[in-house]
Length: 255
Ligand code: HEM
Image (cartoon, rainbow, N blue to C red; front, side, top):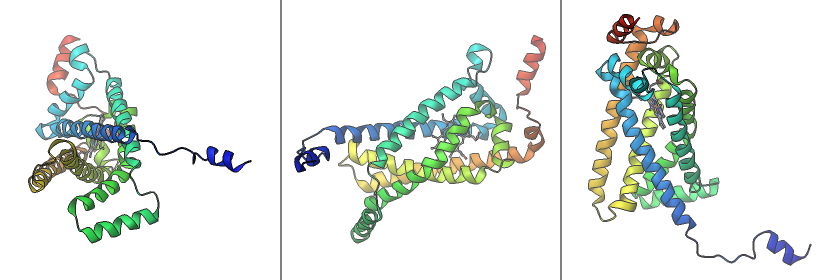
């Protein structure tokens, strides 16, 4: 093989050209991140409906299963929503991986750089890499479970999962990861695209305020599911699903 062929096959003959692709990929990464962050805000409020009682959580669950539109619950509808979120999640992760340090040398250069600069935003970026990396595994497992067994979502099902199946440490870890990752992500989006001239101190305070709010809401929610899980272990193990008294009455009188 001639040297010329070797150079062409290795792609070394191509001159660097100006390309818009990196900027487009960056925009797509920001857009998928924004979608996921806004989805998580909604998700946290829906899941937190348990704080208002079992009936409230049952109503939200059945709403997404189409019960109030079709008169019958179709958990498959939840699987479709989960699949859409999972596709966006995978796309976001693929785009983010481009920026991860790819070997120990790159990682130590970055660390030395961050340490010498002592620049908060640079340090925060690394935290986003750590939390994002861990979420590859934890969020994928959660999404898989929600997609394959949507019928198990409900006060007894979710509470039992937390306590009887012992998943509360998993959820606690995922909660911390998602809130720190999402909070830093939104802050970075604001600085990058929306308010490049806004006071960073103000944006940081806002970011910590939002993170603290969702962490408190998430911890209270986790506590509520654990309590229901402890109180209803037998029902969960017998495969019972929670049904509000008013629905039971309506179903009995319809028979
Ligand atoms: C459409 C997709 C999703 C659905 C239907 C869903 C549904 C649920 C449900 C029903 C729970 C209550 C516990 C249970 O039943 O197991 C829960 C908890 C949780 N989910 Fe999701 N989830 C989705 C996506 C996500 C994603 C993408 C993340 C994060 C990356 C996430 C993070 C969490 C966390 C942290 C909790 C615990 C909340 C707390 O303790 O306050 N979920 N989710």
